[in-house]
Length: 362
Image (spheres, rainbow, N blue to C red):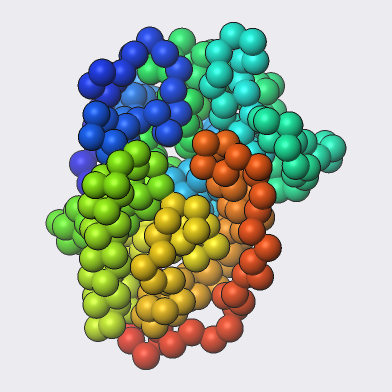
């Protein structure tokens, strides 16, 4: 959980046109395997007053999406820390739109006002309301792509989350795993809940060990299944995904949280994939092996986290389903959203059979 201090440039995928705009569906190698391109903007907010990006109230803005698991975790941790009045936020519409129609074919995140009329997807199909959206009132951009272009981005992957510096008018970071660390530590003097520590130093090695399979096999694993372009690549990802889920189920059969009795940011990282699994990934990403509801410990874990007020408030199942089923025409050409009744996640869970706590610092 170390903190990088410099912006790191990343190269494109082998054989890819690094000058072309891209989205996650294009990040596939010659073997048909999905290979996520690393985030390009990797600056760090510091509590030091002479830092390039010092921690200040009102200076930063988070561009997020209720549909994206990476951005959703950032938004959740921001709220859990009580930073709603310190860092402002915009939330995109869930369905992707062409961002420069007539110039290229890139489709991505768009900003809308919740009072705006419903919109169709990029192919002109469907009608999807704007409830839950928060427009870009900082830069007045129409698309997340516009935000990147304001910062003179060269990576051309216009993803969320984005942590924006209003003073310097540039991107601080678009790497979610580093943004959550900044939110956890750097703004404590302004936070309503400064004592909450979601990444305790004493658990750093344990969290890194967990991340090695939770990120690779589960969080990213569902995308490796869904975006695979060969049978071999799909089956490799599929097998690792369900091995990872069984491993997580085993851990949670013995203790309340992934790091024992202490709730951490790793629990939120796992939750963000699990809560999307049954309504989306089972069908959309061909993850048919087993539903999360069939894993007793994983399912009760999901219910416990969902019942935490700050987690429930940013878990928007309408945005989640609308995004996935309407944004990728190559995966769902007609943008039909399955008529699935979501299982009630407010029913009692059994996780209190184990001791559990939130880590607080003096």
